[in-house]
Length: 196
Image: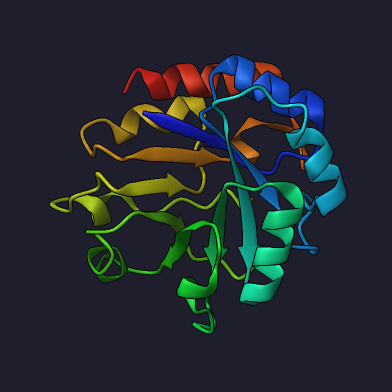
């Protein structure tokens, strides 16, 4: 099972996440978030990363020009996009994208079952709320292209066994406090994910 550690704000957390076995690191370009990072700081971290680690920029209801500008400036490989307002033309985004689907019901999940998406629980805010998607909504659904986020911790990952998710995405579940990761929590989380 692949793992993305989201909400990276400093080089120490980034390197600890990679050492723990993370496949991807997420950088939040949404200013109201406690995990927000500037393009300049993100680039500094990314320039210090080893090869074969995917970098992912998280964007919330932004336009194509902003996404392209930040991704170019930071050498971001993938844009993870929340587009609740349905205004984006994904064809105009110059890096590979993964859409975030904030689900409210099983039918929301069934509608996206055949494409790569990140599935998160709907909350009024954006990200790091620790709210979980009801696992029964995934029953009898092909989850092999879905990345699951929301309320995941090392101790509850075993509940995902048998659903065959493509990957899991964690932020608050491996933090010491908002914006700062805890090394042992990342180690434990990734070990549990790899056991699925």
